Amino acid sequence: MARRKKNKKISKKELSFNILSILVLLTICLYFGYRSIYYYTKQNNVNTSKVLAEIVKNNNKVTTEKNGFHKEKDGYAFKGIVENNYVKYSNRIFRIMKISDNDSIQIVSDRNEGIIIWGDESSYKNSNLYTWLTNKENGIYLNTLSDSNLLKEMTYNENTLLNNKIVKTKDKYTSKVRLLSIDDYIEFNGKNSFLNNGTYFWLLGQNKEKSNLYVDEKGSIDEAETYESYGIRPVMTLSSKTKITSGTGSKIDPYVIETKENNYTGSYVKLGTDTWYVYSDVNNILKLSLNGYIPSNQGKLKKIFSSKTGVFDLTDKTGIAYYLNNTVYNSLAYKNILLDIENNIGEISNETGFNIKNIYSNKVISKVSLLNIFDYNANEALTDYYYINNTSSVGSMIYINNNKGLIDEDSIDNERHVVPTISIDKTILKNGLGTIDNPYVME
Image: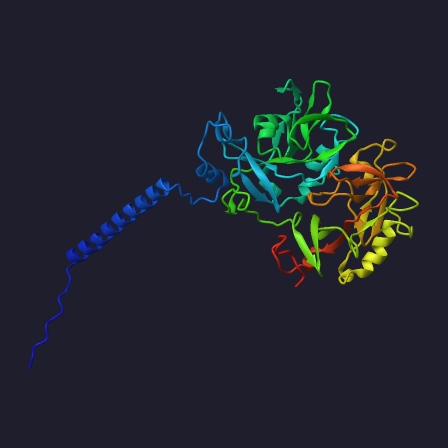
């Protein structure tokens, strides 16, 4: 009978040696593995961070050429014609202007985010633009943003343009959002820069005669009267901790800002066969404007505002208010979900003044309406349509969006396109991404 071999016991010294050997091998593997990843990342310009400032600096080489990413005394700046500084935030596109030494990031809207009448006074602080942007009293813009706590307070001046040079003033403002300034426009090379977008827009600043300034469609700076209207391009500063979820900075693949809350303003909703654009999201109530004109058998419908009055009057059977709240309302397969809209129809004119607060002097409630001249309105594809506000104490003139996309005056009996507005409860929307190709839907 064969004898069994006894199992050989491992001594304590041998066990300790084996454990120590394994630990040494693991340490070596971890050390050289880390070094391999580190140097590969460095050599191949790979950035695993989600912090926007780090990614932008890593993705762009500093240049001294006219167009590109420049090193400044206090950080970095994109200057001239560039195509890799696009950012998506709050459902709309912005352009990166600067990255400061502390990694905060200054951005500006790529397109106009509204068409605004300057107001009764030439100073920026007393203008409709300052109120609209900063949320002072009757402000609107900050309510359209997702996670506005990402924004840092900015201190800035209303400077003077003299012989194409900036003269600093002593006045100072502090807010989270401001208007694109003459300083910005000139610093980033003006008409030969990404800031020249082929539209009309206001600039923060004045000339030596204390006239307000705007940029025309060719990119040239000109002076304007306070009762004129041009586009508004908000500027804001994102916190250094701002992160992104995706993107490379190109126009087709912008950096997408990570937010904890989603304001629907700037997104799209599909109801029945109609696509609507969200221009307000407050307390789960969405205000929507049709992403197009009301159609007719002959193409796009044109109607007079009224044959009687410039007031949005639901009882005037010749007027657009009656038409919208009867013919149009009853044609909508989803009319049962529409909420009442409180419309601010106060007059804005020489007689009453051009201050934004005047629109609140008169109201009317309806199911279907028109845009107010101070509503958030970034849909530049639509022109030649009526607003809801009148511009004459005798009631025969009305505000329109003209063929250049600017606010203008017109007689109430001239035919214009119709862009209706409605309101719905946000919580009924269950699916979709809010994009034009994948809009929010109820089911």
